[in-house]
Length: 143
Image (cartoon, rainbow, N blue to C red; front, side, top):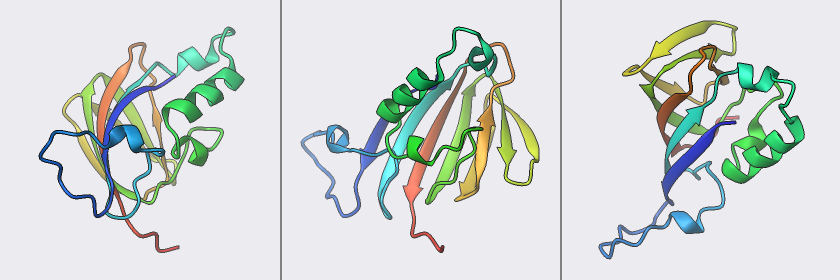
């Protein structure tokens, strides 16, 4: 199950010089247009979900708690589309980015991907966890 840590800003929020973190008030990892999210995720190997001990109901519950907003957009196969521009950086490990047309691209530490509301899924086909950083910028959806 992916684990995450994140920080957020909301549209029109003034910059706080007091050091206050607005993140505790955030109820969704999906930013509204003009809002941002900085998320660090660790993806376990896909094989963890094939383990007989894997509990899909508990996984869904955990995802909804850890990734509110985004978890609601997840399709059963992990594909999803968000109304965001995403800057994605692989920090550690290797992962496969699958796009809507079925094309798969292998990425490794240091690789950067920019997505513009693209339907996609992340596949960790390796035996090791993968850590990635994402900056999500909320945008107006055109459809």
